[in-house]
Image (cartoon, rainbow, N blue to C red; front, side, top):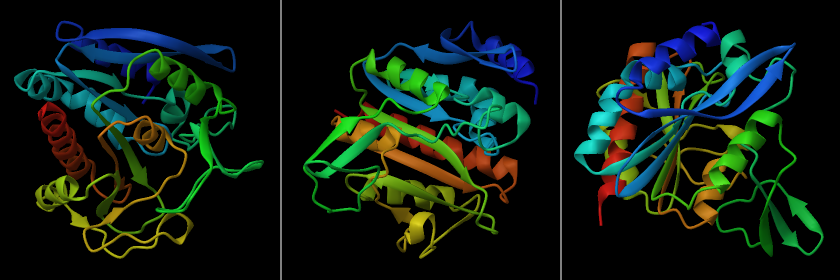
Length: 264
């Protein structure tokens, strides 16, 4: 999809929400506005999608179903801060990275294992000396990082991704904190696709029997967790899963996160 068409279609929701521009990137002389959708509420949920251009389901779910998401959030007095397409030139071209070949890879922080020894991810329970924000990421990621830093940490954060390597129609998720709320979302999602259990994914990590993984990978989600955000998850549908099912699963998780955020 041409990103200009995406922006035009997204703006049809302007009567329901505020659609602002938090930045702009230029690729081959062409500007790509970076957009954020916000609505008011007592507690805030941040939703991000489209870090990788060959993972279109998240941006398309938000484009097509934003009205339903807004209705759910308003019913629970939850504020939304939605970044529907973080990497617009990658989304338009259908390739993982931006049109310059830079890698908007969710790169928000670094871990210092011991003084002077810095890595970009740690395993669950692995000790470390300190963590610090990372600002050496490509322009799309850096613009998002700077924008998020302008605001107080939200109550919840959900990042919508897809897995292009798993050759099956399924889903799985990364989570931070207690697993039980996300197991409930897995159960609800089973009406639309299988969950990938005991699946080897990134760096030979393996999902558990619920299709869940805990991993501190330096991403925006990991950064939210380190900043004390209580509800943080990353949903992965596979690109082999049909788009209708991806939309349905994405909506299960968005609605579920809204309800978690709404809890006192």
